[in-house]
Image (cartoon, rainbow, N blue to C red; front, side, top):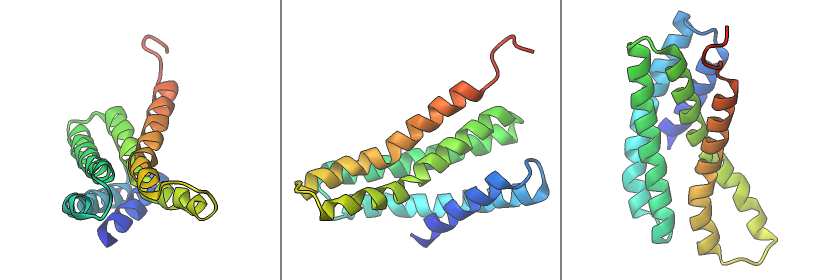
Length: 149
């Protein structure tokens, strides 16, 4: 859990630091290291959690997607594909934000009557898929049009 928190902090640092600088690169390297540690630790935790099976599956999928995007983003920058790297890292950060969204969306449970297990299982998916899709839409809308210039 600490590694995942440090990954999120490192991603934010990499995002605000000037692109291509040594500080940006080191923040990115630390983020990758922490994502690998946090993501691999999250997989067994997801499977062994007390959540219903659909919730466990959602958390497991989140961990797999996080690790996959981290690996693809690293490969993209190693191949010099900066735009692809940017998009993949933004999507990776969106998935990481799921931990924050999950906690925020648990607050209303205190005031509403709901089947907690079903609500939690839905949040296990919603908390990271909605930010991921929103980020994908943002990337799509902000990327330069082919042939524009």
